[in-house]
Length: 64
Image 1 (cartoon, one colour):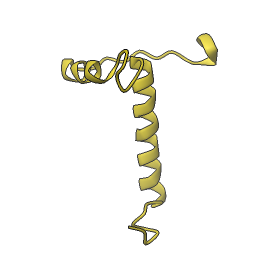
Image 2 (cartoon, helix red, strand yellow; image 1 turned 90 degrees about the vertical axis):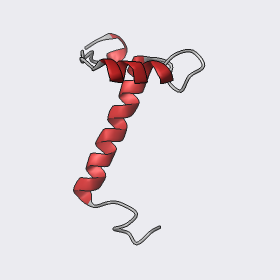
Image 3 (cartoon, helix red, strand yellow; image 1 turned 120 degrees about the horizontal axis):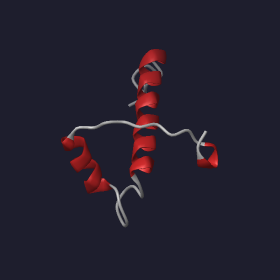
């Protein structure tokens, strides 16, 4: 386990993804760090997968 009780992982991304991240990561931008952006993206990914798996969407509840 790394500092702050967090595990460290290493990923490889395409130049396109790296360029996109640079647009949104840094001082005064949407994300403070690549780690922050990656964590947010993974949380969103897992949330969407779980919604699909459980059928827990607005459509299945009759909401619009």
